[in-house]
Length: 362
Ligand code: SF4
Ligand code: SF4
Image (cartoon, rainbow, N blue to C red):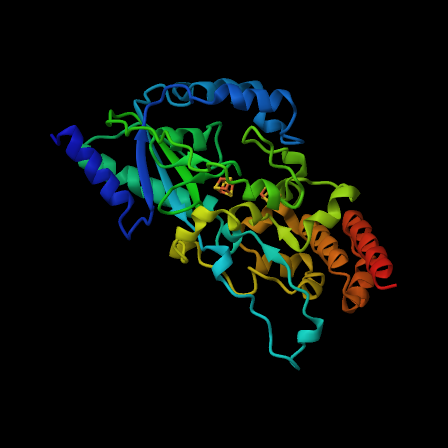
């Protein structure tokens, strides 16, 4: 039988090996998360907008006690998988004379440039569980999550020693920044917990609060989710409120502003895990062309991509808003054609974009 200390070392080594690619790994207990009351307070103020699944009774009780998710749980392994740092990628503009005059660039949040992490990470978690079972020589009760279950993952990551929760609400590691995705495995084996990360290294910095285009970062390290561009361009399934449209700029899926301005991301590695590698044409899409995506072309371009979450109707709604914000007259013919799109929501946002362009070009 392997000594507990040696077992933990082997697990961390395997998780952070080039085979699996996690850049951070730490262990915490299944005790209730330390900042549960702040989360409950956030829910009671209805800052979660239309994301009702966060507030249902089953999620709330399970979030309060990870042992309700896995009764055999004795420890929680918290992991971080890196994605490419957005600020270091140059926009792929064509050369002058190759249609550059008609190029209207959009922005997509960096975590969504490649294959959906909901596909990539569970595979890695299964491989890690298999490794653990080989080491201990018997099946181990387990449950893996990545942004999918009723778990306060940043809270657990902080308690596992991975970093602190910044004012922008992201988990920040002092050596690696915040361009990574968190994942957890609840395990039915005892592993020694790591010491929690106890310092707040934001200090007097307020860059993210000041840079947020929709001013949705609140003073208590929570977000007014209903105003956050990530929510508006991904989770919101209806019209984008008119008063928020101009603040969205050219973000068409998610937003990285509060991470791009964070000084701790100067230390982020430029390349993410190869399984999340950017696909051609995704990070900065040519918005006029995107308006021409038929359902078939949309599914082909975004096969296994997180962008499927917005569906074609949500994505083209966002593209129309970004084109309206661009005020570029070159977009007028494509927007006029979009007035006949089969989706009424897309039509409506294209009409708004045309009005914006007309107003701004006077
Ligand atoms: S993702 Fe964008 S909109 Fe949301 S909090 Fe960060 S900067 Fe603000
Ligand atoms: S930008 Fe400044 S305040 Fe915001 S998370 Fe980073 S260090 Fe903290």
